[in-house]
Length: 515
Image (tube, rainbow, N blue to C red; front, side, top):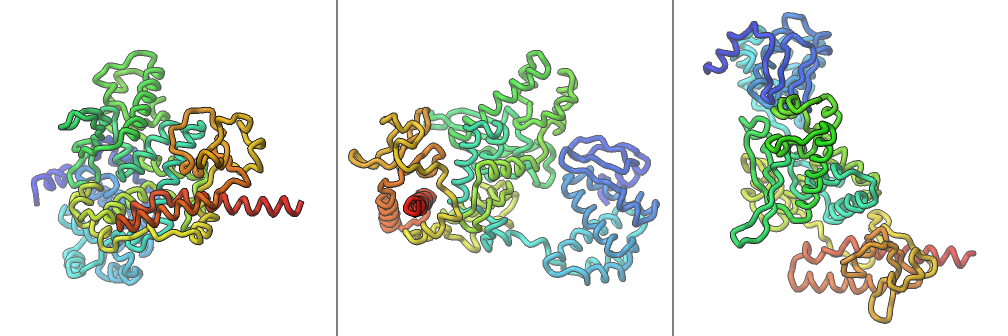
């Protein structure tokens, strides 16, 4: 037994301990708060087992809470509770383990694999309740681990990686929602950071202002860098190690806006200037409800020693789902609102890297994996989302993708700014296709981006079919020249949006004819 383990065994009388995330926990409490995301409550377990056994279970979990991540400790508790629940009590015998295994199919055999490690550690720590016979039985079993990357391999349209069209729709929808004042800068920044980097929710939630960097590369060109805290690596504690990731200027600009917003809100809360050494330690994505409980700079400094002022990790997914609903983002594969989780951005990053020909080492580094075990799922079944879209397929996908965001008008005079000739969107010097309803400057190369813009007002009798034909012809030309459908598919969402406009024009003409 290692010295560390011995110390934990001998320290049976200690009532207070600190989780690996730095949270003070009272051993005797029925609720353990291990970090901002993870809590363990023993009330349900106490209904199933004796007080003596509860005490021993808590001692084993204390070991994991101190030496392992909070999520790992919580997962062990959940798996053990599942075992107790199915056995209607807790007799830790070879017979009860064999019976429990018979209730699990191959897909869920990893439940028992987690319990196996938990019970073996229980025995190694020297606590009563787990016999050598139980340990011998567990050692004799080869158990299947948790299935890795199944939704990635089968390109699951509900939980797997996003298609190129879905990803573009989300990013555009997020920006448009912010421009309309429908989401906060916090929601925009954390969502686009998840989309643009593929980092885990907990890594995003652990970011601080000093992690958003701007410098120069070896060519003296501007370089935009994120210093991202590691997570899930063995031995890593709260913000104990980092990886740097280069990002685009556009994403850096949004994160810089978020940083300034944080400084403004913290300064307003305290009513005084915050010292520079604390200012850079402020969370990039703060929990402003928790901030209300911090009343002065001294309390702020103490709070910044742990993660208490950072958002809960799940807020990244909450923000992404808010954007999907507000921007009305549909999946062209399901015909339903996009089922959004932060994890899907991560799957998308790995999938796109595999499609571009990167190997497991690069993908593992890109996704901040500690090894290549999980990176293999991305290259085992390299997907090709960029199918050959033609006019027929564009019309078939249009009702599902809902890429067109503007408003069809019968004529120029019916449009917002219809009397302003400068608002016309031209196909060429002799043909116009619609009106721009925005009074802001737009540097987009019209008319292609207009079809997915919410300010666009296409005219009923404009040559939209001509644009669709030209887009598809250009797509085929690029595919033939480069042999790369990923490059050729850059305008696929626009193609679908133009097809949707054509369908709406046909439906509108039928309405007018009937009238």
